[in-house]
Image 1 (tube, one colour):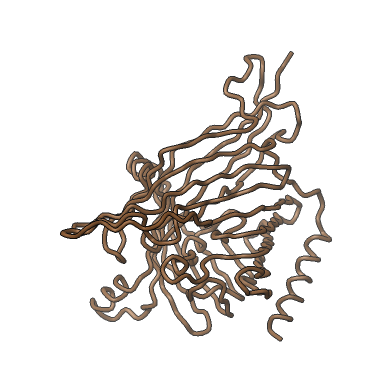
Image 2 (tube, rainbow, N blue to C red):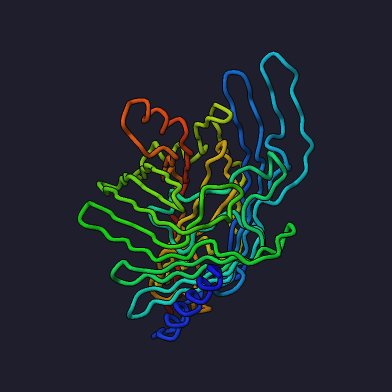
Length: 399
């Protein structure tokens, strides 16, 4: 009965929003078959071991206005490819290519007098749920773990995933994520998220909250229940820091998050994607060794051309378990000017990859002693995010 009520409310809210649309949806057009392929390899090391892991090839490209493709293929179905232990012989695991992500996405945005409506439909194997552009609470959302590598169980989202989001100019909004599981013998329909939200800045203070159906911290992902969460933070000179409280069906988590202003240090970390892990203890790295942009990009823009439009995006990789970086998403943030005409030259401006955010979320919520703080830290899940700012520039030749 609860699912039926949620579905009816989703249809009612979505219908009222779409019926009030005052302009057409914008379907992002960034050239045909314009995209990128890149490859990287992962390492994990401590004083007693060195693991070679997560050899991966990632490809994404835009097919048509509002349609794009994303894939991530890793080397094998186990955690590591080669395991070198102190005082013992190396272990070599079989190379068995494994698909982390492989999906088509259909998306569109509507900017109207009431706010912004965003819609996305993904078909395939997915490990990244955030849509549209993430907020501060999203940086503390659960990331798919490693149950598929460790136990052979499901990890991530498999099927048809629909996300609908409405954000008003006043900070009040509605978000819903619905999935039809049609792989791995889970042919069923689930409400992943269905909540009202509010987010607002008050000077340097930032406040966000969600109320409704939210995902729990259970694994595998996809389990949801009624609850709420609250984030209160400070934004100062490009740095963000905040505290977090979550209660979903009387299961409470508390958290802390910090986002870093771009710097030489965050860019250095972005080159190797360094992270400290606790299970197994050590440091993880994901080092790129190949990158190729392809499609209708123009390296040399004719001298008599003028800039007529831009599309600003942010590429994001999120992780938590063992520092394993297995997902990727390109968020479209904004559009300015003419980007849809067929006679435009396209150039891409890529800023360095940087460490963007580090967060901790813990089931400890009573802080009455130093020991409780130690327990909070010891039992916390450590979430991370690397980001890259990118601008697609559109030029038109002037005769």
